[in-house]
Amino acid sequence: CPENSPRKMAAVETGSCFQLSSETLKVAMKLFANNRKRLCQKLKDNKTLQPNSVIVLEGGRQTARYCTDTDIVFRQESFFHWAFGVTEADCYSAIDVDSGKSFLFISRLPEEYATWMGKIKPPEYFKGKYELDEVHYTDEIASCLNKINPSVLLTLRGKNTDSGSITKEASFDGIEKFKVNNSLLYPEIVECRVIKTPEEIDIIRYTNEVSSFAHKEVMKAVRPGMKEFEMESLFQHVCYSKGGCRHVAYTCIGASGTNCATLHYGHAGAPNDRTMNDGDLCLFDMGGEYYCYASDITCTFPVNGKFSEDQKVIYNAVLKANRAVFAAAKPGVCWVDMHKLAERVQLEELVKFGLVQGDVDAMMKVNLGAVFMPHGLGHFMGCDVHDVGGYPEGVDRINQPGLRSLRTARVLKEGMVLTIEPGIYFIDHLIDKALADPTQACFIRNEVLQRFRGFGGVRIEDNVVITVNGAELLTQVPRTVEEIENCMKGDKTAK
Image 1 (cartoon, one colour):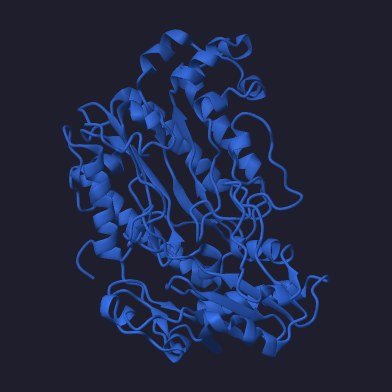
Image 2: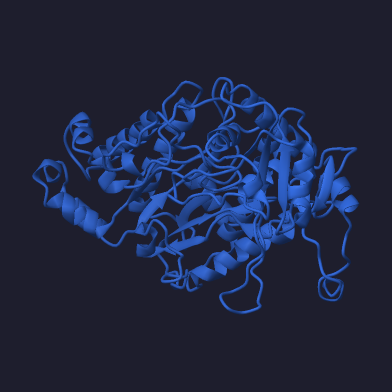
């Protein structure tokens, strides 16, 4: 690899692989074969499964921009990708649960496709590319399934607990001739996605490596007078040119100054368009995506390369919370307790600084921590940046400030991948509400707080995988004040 570019992690594989160049990660198709095997076994462990059941999944559709013929760059639907790794649009798939046999159904393309889009590849090509048992056309789904004569088709229907949206259930011509169960599959495949295999973790480790490298390039490039979107552009360029990440995992948050207090800044109404000024903090929450596996990293640092004393205090309070959670995270620990730990550490540091006063236990009882950190501590991550499985049946959301924003309240298990992203923000309407509430206002030293109006905020977000007795840190960026300042000076020894 070129100097300072992401480390090449291509493993030696004999079978079919996904790889964009010799410098990007090689992903073997056995990853998806293993995922299908895990799913079939999990279904077999379910006593309600009928013999001779067949899973049917519908892949993502190629869409256009509104009423035009301008295609939107396609990205595969996440459940379909997890099971098959297929990059093409408009496909279906099936898995015979008893035997594990895999089927892919591709579009039968018209002759003129070859003129506009390239050579039309036959089913045999896709059979080899994805190491599948059979490949047919989508107009043959019903006839192929008739030959199997399944007792029931298992289709995917369930609610995403982050978005509230329902998955798109597979439907095809002739499905009405089959018995369909659309409730059994969803919770089982979701649980499979929650626990990552070593091969999946390798991809997430790679996306973190690429994105960490891109964040460091942003740190080195930022200067007062530049626009926020210039740094967004640089990040995306580095992720794609150095790491093969055509997509980012979510809309880039490229905030500076007061914008750092807007948790999901960067949307169409606030498109990273502010000029970054001398003395501002900038908060860049950006993550590349490689082969439909995400990263999600936030770095906060001064635009001019030097932290002020106030910036340093707030930053170090958040960093201490981040590191405390990382040290405590392990199998058997409840994620709700990790959120409370982050709140407690941050409040303790704010007491030392003199921004709040009093007993921290009493502050926790009145949810003072949520005034400064209104979001949840972190979330699952995998094929989606906010990955599925946060609230399965039996795990309830806690309706309290801060905690209600947690995207999971589960007990940690080995193989889970999560973000750790504590933060301290100075959001005017939340501060005003707290000052108007006597149970919270009594802890706040308003004369100190006033100088932080317009400060913005600090978030420090890392990606971790839960191991057998702790957690592995996947994100590799400068984190201490000294490391950040050295990196921004262009110190080649900086982490």
